[in-house]
Image (cartoon, helix red, strand yellow):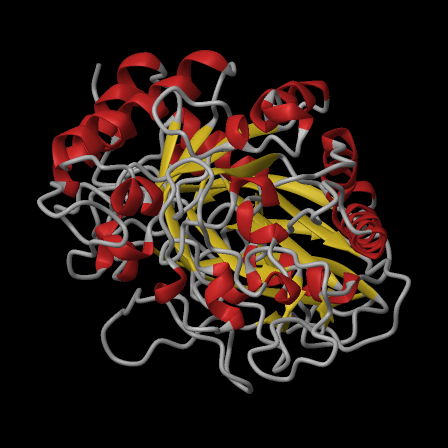
Length: 522
């Protein structure tokens, strides 16, 4: 069985890297969710950093504690929170799924095992997990069983965060050497593949993978490259259709300030090329953009840093040092985030975490419903005209009759044929006029064509020059009285043969339908 990244290369025609079927399905999801839920969810300041003795191994790691609230989130460094802290007494995963479905989530990635090593299933390869959380269901609970069953009921794909090279508990308290550590990590991965049904994706993250050897994350002498190779082989052998991200060749994980799904640099056989994409790249990598987390920091920061991963029941009352949250994202923020990510060729991965009670916060659920309805009403249920088109890259590739005024223009390329449109513009003609005027200008590229991803500082054009899976543009001219809209292909991507046809699977016009008043995201 060939690895998925090899299939991408073999499918290329005329130099254009083609996504495989699983990558195309992933792009169609558009909206995925990270769900951080583990021991850090249950820590609170009154616990005075309840680090030990850990009931499963004994010992005390109080000396490791710095007292930082932020560190309470980073269980990679401090994996000895008492297992009995884990007690989601009101656990209701169907409630999670209902809220996520209302927002439009097609996949949820649950932290089956986070940095610290606490497992949300009763693993045979570690004592640190729900099977020793006797305060919850007498140590007989299995979060993953409930999660997998509920996901299938709600037709939501399953993703597990279970990095095989980070496990703070086994590294610090497991009494294992590097070889035993490797064996146990692969054993845990096998349990997830064998015992809980189909897995759409594994997320192999791990902050320490990009840092020098860290004895807090793994035993000395651990060969992380070998573990990854064996983990990839295990997944491809037992579940060939399962995707892996971000440290592999299936999907690139990027931030909300990156806008494209162009292939990484030539000869990059994995996601190491994600930071330097190029139209000349040999592989197609969908971009998964993770710029929104439901919890917001005091400075409005919503980046998925450790401080903002897990939900906490305390709202920093009386604590001004290292206070993580002042609130959560509103529906407008999520709506704009959808445009900034899905509307720029990527898949939005939003972090929304359950509370320590095991349910989604009521105000968060309300926001999820409101944002989901606004996105659905604006972009899925209604349009002021839609068309498909194909042909040479030229002016007037598609001409669409408008049936009313509109606020957004959606363009979608048929990526099954590769990403071919390198730059484009959209113009319009009003009733009674033969003059075509600019509605969406082309991206101006100075000098040689550059396909590096572009940041979005205030006042600068947020678009790169491609269409990709989906592009959502805001017209620069009033749309009342417009008779026709015209899509112009300005250039092909570098990898596309001269004279090749391009394929628009959709050009459509949409009226903004939201229950709030705010500024458009341009």
